[in-house]
Image (cartoon, rainbow, N blue to C red; front, top):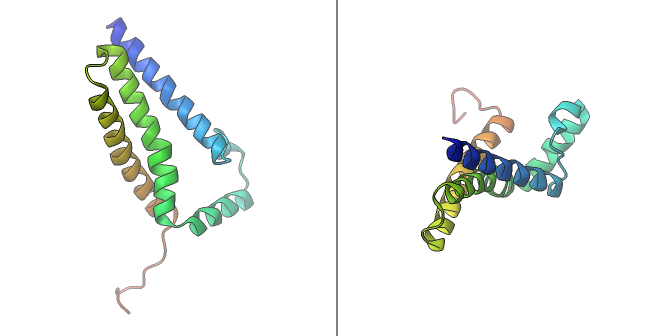
Length: 123
């Protein structure tokens, strides 16, 4: 039980460290949600709108949250079981990062950047 907790904690730590480093690279500090004014929020939203959906999903989703999740799960697996095959470990990292990051990036884009759809659609 102690080995599981230690490997899980190590994976969480690595994931959060990646999010911290990636946030610094994207100029978004870790506690930006608590310190932003409405003007700063609007400016950041406009910056993301100019990037477009594909770049947003890639930068914020896959390389941000997806890679943090993939690194955390992969490091926890390595700490718990060891490395059976580096190829399988790298494949696990890539697959987890792509799927989780793609899901997070696309759902957060849809949630943050909704546009009004006329009713009924097509008019």
